[in-house]
Length: 85
Length: 413
Image (cartoon, rainbow over all chains, first blue to last red; front, side, top):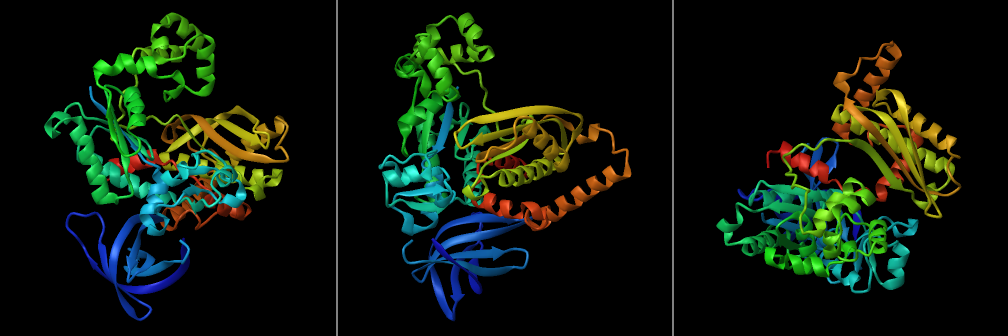
């Protein structure tokens, strides 16, 4: 499970031509730049007419739930994987 | 005719295992909250090894597998993955029927030969899924001359395989398949068939069709065809509009709401959602149905026709409430509440409100809908259903295949 949080973060992203979603490459979180090891799943979360992109990924060995708010073009860490899973 | 039936393996659980690597290899169950007596929506392969199955209560799952991990369901996640796998399938053929959130039929009669045959095509789809969705999200594929047989074939393919019932094998499949294994033949029909001496599909095929029709009505003719390995149900591609016959919602109540006042507030919440969906579809309905289940698993329900069609939540709620009171009211422990509106017609074909007060109510409802469309369902609502909305949204609500098909149509996928 994820421990909930809400932290704005800087994210480096590529927009591949033949994939449905942008792919995060690094996350600047809590003062450190973490390379994204693997994106496990991307899904859309609807909030009214806005579709947020939610990424379950591992960056620097930590499981994170990263969210892109397309309305304000901002990234957030919404969840951090806790120890027991 | 060549039909592929794709069935996602342990779907919700596999998606959760894909999203969270720490859940992989563990017995997990996707459910509502285990502390409020909900049911297992999906069990992972590992949980299935302990006998845990979809539809069990969460306490039954714990009894079978004490270290099972409960994961709350996340319908947005499953809906996104379903939309993505449907988009992959549409690359193979436009003849895709979204049968449920985790089951799809494809008519590949034209395309299979160009792709090296149906088995090669099924395996290519499985590879695409692994590459584009993730290695943990797998599907089984059944291939057969029609939907009914393809659904039987997929059972042989699970988990993660491909099985093909070729036309020459159909008589043997009919001989060995108990009628209860066919989707559409529930336990009650299977029991009646058993009493008639019909145990397998082949028995069904040999039984005189007229006698089946006499016993089961129109469904008897369908049963007779199934018994001969035929299926009258055509594939309904995602781009074909399906006629909406009813709009409604039902919800299993969390324990804290299983009292008459709680059930009443859930009913109001469900009427609110039903009316909103009616307005979104531009429909009004004239007949209101309610359904309740009590702690002893007894169902009650009734319907009432209104003097005019409506999409007004208060009117739907008041009608359902009057009906419930006429039938003895809510029990002390109501476990499920449902409401449904039928006899639908386009709102555009009904007269405008005659009185100013009715017109104001309509405009208010439209304004609230616009706010919810823009800012989400929680942006505006009745204070009286606030707690129940939080609890019911936390505990479930899956199965949005019609919305997924609609999205694919709208996006021109």
